[in-house]
Amino acid sequence: MRINVLPTPKAMGADAAVFIANKLNQAIASQGYARLLLSTGASQFDMLEELVRQDVAWNKVTMFHLDEYVGLSEQHPASFRKYLKERVVSKVPFAEAVFVNGEGDVKENITFLSNRIREAEIDVAAIGIGENGHIAFNDPPADFDTEESYIVVKLDERCRLQQVGEGWFPGMDAVPETAISMTVRQMLRAKCIVSVVPHAVKADAVQKTLAQEVNNLVPATILKTHPDWHLYLDAQSAQGFLK
Image (cartoon, rainbow, N blue to C red; front, side, top):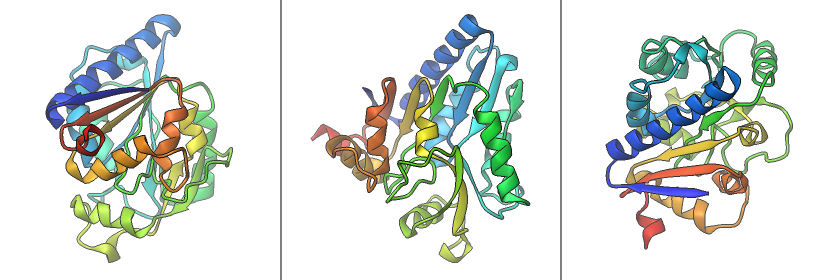
């Protein structure tokens, strides 16, 4: 585990983006391609803004992402497919972008995703940490045991409140109750994990992640078991950790 604390979200995002780009370039140099897993949400804005500016052979990179709401249209402002297409996919020429689709036949969509994600290892995975300590949409108590790659999960109240607080939805009633999420075990199969976690609202989750033993009530604690985990914090999100 490596913890990186930068003074501002901008500085943190830039530093993390350079690190991720270097990992992608190393993978391309050694095997001819790279596979990238991305998070979404407000916490990733600065990192993604810098990542698309990096000198990477993007046409050799296949992008995956972590989750999507069940039944939410891609045109909805909170859609993670919309988020990634606007902020990333429209700006770099990926070899392929494989999206989590929560519309239509969810079971069939999960089978497709699972087959694609298992074709080869993910070289670098950007995995954020939620205010309730979740990773992807694996809210507490998270399932640490399933060997599936993607599952349908029920979103807890704090998770749904976070989505409202970040401005994606006008109120709790508008937030979907379920989502397709990459599982914990699938995330841990990535060669390298990078967690970009800025802002004061994440300070409690960061402190619990670092202070507590691995437990599914703070799902992010399991990231500490990964052999190549890099945590990026700003001064606000690190305030509990630095005391």
